[in-house]
Length: 194
Image (tube, rainbow, N blue to C red; front, top):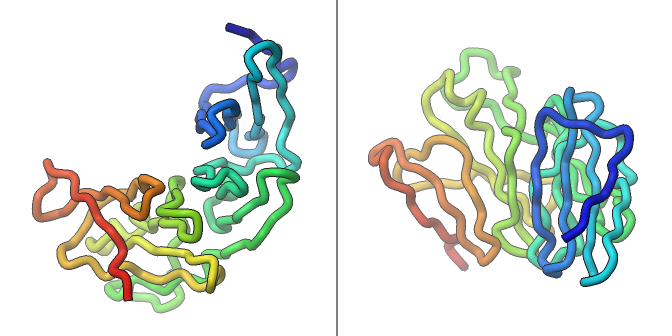
């Protein structure tokens, strides 16, 4: 359909996330953690347009909200998760890893986890994230929700069975995750409404 020259950008890794408007896509491009760039691209049927996100270099794009009005990204060290406005790339809120709690089986109470490299929108108000990479050393993996009503307070999800790995939100109020009890099966989860 169309090709766009990204000039000085090259990538050994890239992540493509479609925008809910059906005409745009976000590309997260980079060859090293310090030079990752987010590119927004759109196609109106005749003309392609691109723009670089006005974020600091190295930001890792994770997901776009179902309404398309915001997106979530991580720093290269995955210690800060940030929600951004899509229109101007301005930060809405940053959630530092220090807001997380130490794993209950950790020997050192100051041994805080960092975010995994993937997080996504359960719905327009809630992000799901995980700390499975570092939790793995203690066995039980943990997933967290971040709700816009209390955006700086990660809430650990209390699953009825142990889960493993990174969850994937579906944007409709549900997400999928694997269970330790049944490693070859993917489970569909939904938030319990009050």
